[in-house]
Length: 134
Image 1: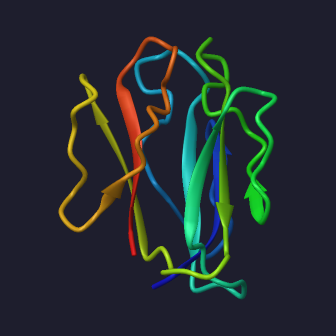
Image 2: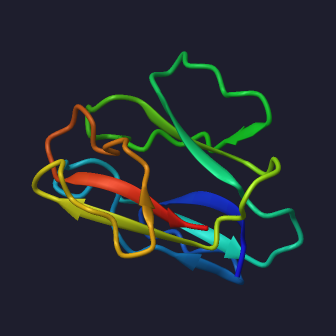
């Protein structure tokens, strides 16, 4: 199943029909808003081929990428982090997982690649990483 859309859900917001919520709080242990990734698989859009995180409010969105305009450290007093993704040519993202750890050395699940950006950067709390499989 190719991932065709990605969003961030806030607090107890339900995912849109046909979407899957990754049930790991992106602010786990940091006392911020409850935030969760959700994705659509096999939707009507082209598959996502890359995910990139912006660090800071002023970092520009790379050309060809779509920005999810929710600070992933919302309410946690950490770095401003925003998710972006593209549907440019490349291998389609097939699956996503969020992993957490008490340290930065956590390995991705077998067959997954870890995006090396701690989504709790600058906030107290667990180390949180998004992993993907193509």
